[in-house]
Length: 208
Picture (cartoon, rainbow, N blue to C red):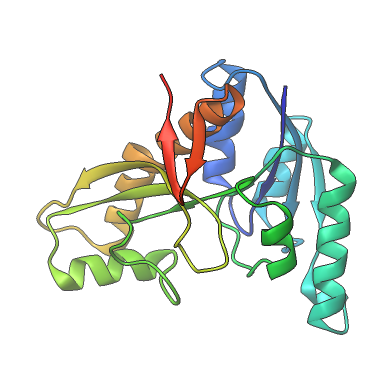
C-alpha cells in the first residue's frame, strides 16, 4: 500500500481529483495519509477533513527563520512515514535537503508541456498568460518527479490540450485542469503505487 501525503497551498482541485480517484478505485493500492498546507485558510484543508484525511498546517509565518520552517516541514513529513509526496499546487519552494532525502519520491503537476513555459516564475495563471501571449495552439500539463531544479525532474506523464479562439488565461487554465491535470495526476499516482514507473539515467521508464 502506497502511503501518500499531498501538499497544497490553495483550493485543492487537484487534491479533490486524487480523493475522487481513490474512492472510485482509479487509484489503487494507495492510502492518502495526510494533506499538508502552508496556508491556514486553504480550502484544500476542508476537502481533506470532508474525506477523513488528516490535515496539517506548516506555515513559514509561524517560524522566525526559513531554516526553522524547513526543519519543521521535514520533521512533519518524516513523522508521517509516507512513500510518496504529491505537490498539487504547493507554492512554497521545498528545502534542498528534503528533495535529496526523498529523491524520486516527490511528484509535481505543472500546467504546461514541459519544457515549454516552465521554470522560475511560471506558475498558476502566469503559465497560461505566457502561452496565450506566445500564440501556441496546444497547451497541456506534465507530471514529473521533483529534483533540485525548477520543473526539471524526470517526466512521468504529459497530456496536450487544444487552445481555442477566444481563450483567456482563466478559460485555458480551467480546460487544462479538466482535460489534463485531473486525469494525469491520479494516473501517475496509480502507476507509482503499482510499480510501473522506474527512473533510469534521469528519465522515466513506464512498464505495462
